[in-house]
Image (cartoon, rainbow, N blue to C red; front, side, top):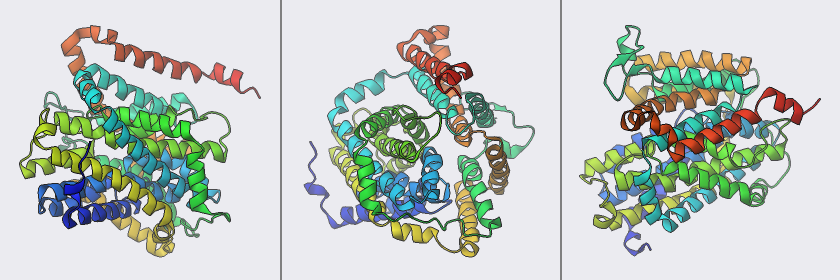
Length: 485
C-alpha cells in the first residue's frame, strides 16, 4: 500500500530519529508534555521541507505518550494528559519494587498498540473515512459523556465521589468565553478568565504539583525507588505478551476514539483502561495493576492511527497534538480535506510510515533505555525538586505566556492535595475539564439540529445503555452483594 523508497533520504531519516528521541526524552521529563515538545520543535520543523518537517512532528507526537509513562510510573507525574490513566497502577507497582519492569511493560504495550493502530489504519481506511463522515455531533457527544463516566470510576473511593470530581471539572472547563456564541460566562469580572483556565496549568497543578510538594518537603529522595531482582525488559515483554486480549481490546478502543474528531487522547486512555476487562473493584494485586498499565498505554498509542483519519480527511484535529500538526500544514500552504489522499500521496505515506517506525523505535528506546531515563529521574532530591519545579513552571508559562497560569497551577496543586486526602478522583476532574467545551459544543449542535430527537440516534442509545450498566454495577447494594464481608 505504501511506497517507502522515496522516504529513505537522509533528511527524512534524521527527522524520524531526531523526533523519536526528542519526544521520548521530553515526555519522560517531569513537568514537560508531548504538546510542549511539539511546540518547541515547531520552528525547526517549519524551517524544513514539508515532508521531513511533518515526519519530525508526527514522530514526536507518536512517542510522547511512550516517554510520558516513565514519569507517570516513577514519579506519579503524567508526562502527557493521556498518561493520567497510567499513574495510579503504574506508580503503585513502582513503589512495590517493579519500577523498571513496569516501564518496560508500558513501553512494549505502547509500541504494540501503535503497531495495531497502524494496522487498523491500513486495513480499514476506506471504511474509516465513511465512518468519520457519518459520525455527527450526537455520536461525538455520546463518546465524550461515556468517557467522562468511565473516568469517574477511577481513583475515587466511590462512584459518587468520582461523579462529583467530574462535575467540578466540567464546571471549571466552562469558565470563559463560550465557543459556539463567543459570549463570556462565569468570568466573575476577571479579564484573565475570559480565555478560561489553561489545560497545561490545570494538569500540571493537579498531578505534578502534589508530587513536587512531596519532593520538596520529603527527607528521603522521592525517586529512590528500588527494583526487585529481575530481568526487567524480558519480564516487561512477558507481561505484555501474555495479555493479548487486553492489548487488542485496549488498542481497538483507543483507535475507535481516535477517529472521532476533537475527542483527544485523555478519553482514549481512560476508555481503554475501563473497557479492557480489568478488575476495578476489590483488592488490586500486582497482576491487576499490570493489566491497567498495559491497557492504558496500548490505547494511548493506538489512538494515533485513528487520529490521522479526521485530521487528514476532514481537517478536524483529533486532539491538541494534531492541532499543532494542522498548524504546520497551514504554514506549508497545504490544506487537509477529503481530497488530501489523492493530491498528496507522498505526505500520507510519509506520515503513516513515520507513525509506525517511531512507535517501534520509541518502545524499544524506553524499554532498553529505561536505566538512563530512570537515572534522569534519580537525581538527588535537592537537585531534582527545584529543577522539576522550574521545568513545570516553564512548561506552564510557555503555553500562553501569562503569569496567571502559574497562579492557576498553584491553585490546582492545593486542590490536588485536598482531593488525594479526601479520596476524590483527580483524573475525573481533569477529564471533565477537557471534555466540558466538547460536550457543550456538540450538545448544542445536536439539539439545534435534531431537537430532543437526537437522543433517539443509535450512538446515543448505546451510550445511555452502557452508562446505565456502569452505574448499576457500581451501586452500593450490588457491590456489597458481590463482595460480602
